[in-house]
Length: 239
Image (cartoon, rainbow, N blue to C red):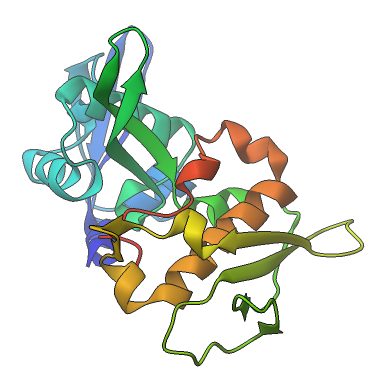
């Protein structure tokens, strides 16, 4: 349903001369705002002072961002997240980029503190790869158990131990392969797989392998806030 919402969310702006920000809201501006696509219809323009990226969204959109896409973020964190999304031309309403609050160890404070992590999802990595004009598709995913034997269909009731996916890039003689190990990426609660990691283990592990392969095939995307430790996408959205 988030993707459907993204199709009709309305927000587009372009900074005009003089320090003011022109905000244009339309019925189909999300693609144009983030991906340079779509026709502008029923335009209603208004000026707002230059400032937070949040100003480009109405109250309903901000509420959706704070509860579903960037939960737990402060206004400053959300503004930073949206600025990064706009600079990278990634659409949070299309599940291309997320903001996640994680517990991280702070040496200076001698304990764990909650910090925001900006994470580009596999859909965002695919969008970035396609813009290079070098992306040529992927191999079919393969799965293996503890015995190391690869198969293209995983039929066991137990989750696979590993998944690998190859990405084809123009000019390369072979696909660039990403391998994801279950024990390194599975998200657990009380020692047990949780959410979609419990319900769709092969699907989730395949996404991790694909994200890893995309980063290896297109290393210039490393500045896109992709974190190898967090290839596993937020469980709520990785459907």
